[in-house]
Length: 420
Image (cartoon, rainbow, N blue to C red; front, side):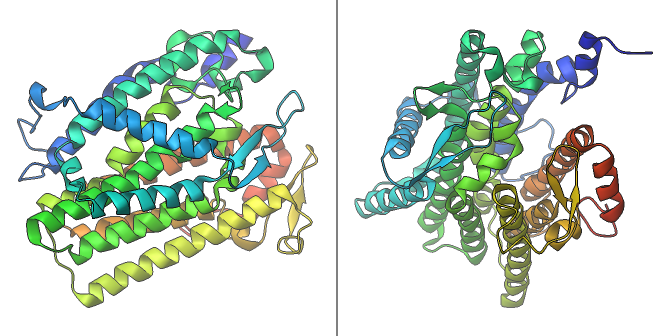
């Protein structure tokens, strides 16, 4: 039996449809606050009952709105500086291409210099550890307010500016997924700014704050804390150095800007990705030189796979005739595009996800194996990448048809060779 247009839309909804779009904006913010509270508790047990929930008086601090507001204002200022190059995004449905400033790495460097200056002046950066919960509460409120603004303003956007997946007519679902694809205030792109700036750089700042808190408590940073800081700083630096590559990702190309991305960028990333550093402040751990070397090698292998495969994909999307990718074997599709079936993308369908998972594991191992909490990130991220891979699989099958089936036969493993 054929499905009508409304039924097809309902069947194609992501994240559990209306039910998921109703529950996720409630439970994910609560999850962030719960994880931070557990992380700072002596037992750090995610199964502890009753759970170590913060008192309502600890959810707020009068300085926090100024800290969050000042931080976002700083990153907006750095985003607007006329430094770096201007790059064009992919072609939109109306045939246009938006322009984006590529200066995230410069923003990271300036932020780093400002942090060094603040530490030299004696600013107690480690105090952010005590403010983690109120900071997270404020960031969650900002994400909600931004999402509400994005939803309301989307009704003044032209039809071709709306995201295909976030324009269902269901208010709850569209609020969650985002109706408008590329919301802008003048030339300021809200989604692109949030994707790599305040939350991602904020993650590094929170990690540094945890390191400084450890110095306050124990006079020097531990080897596990240094490894976590260095590994994750490398990851963020890589993302901003290769900022142009984000213009070809699913977040920018397909997903609207709603609560899903706003909350993820502004609250989820900085406050759950920094859990390992926060955990080590309260629950110190020691590593032998041999164990530390093994973890460093694991992170290095993951980073190598992640960076090489992403660079190959981005270069092929932008210029398939480039000498670095022109020799690779491809499959023609009915859309005129070609699919890579050799190189990294002939190894598994998502080698970048494999590298991501290996790095995530390396970030958790410095915390030891006595608690599950530091492994929340690698568990969550693996589930996220599997779900993301499934979304990508369905989109590619609908887009490329028979060519995608041929590709899947040539490259049978999705993320992990011989396993998945």
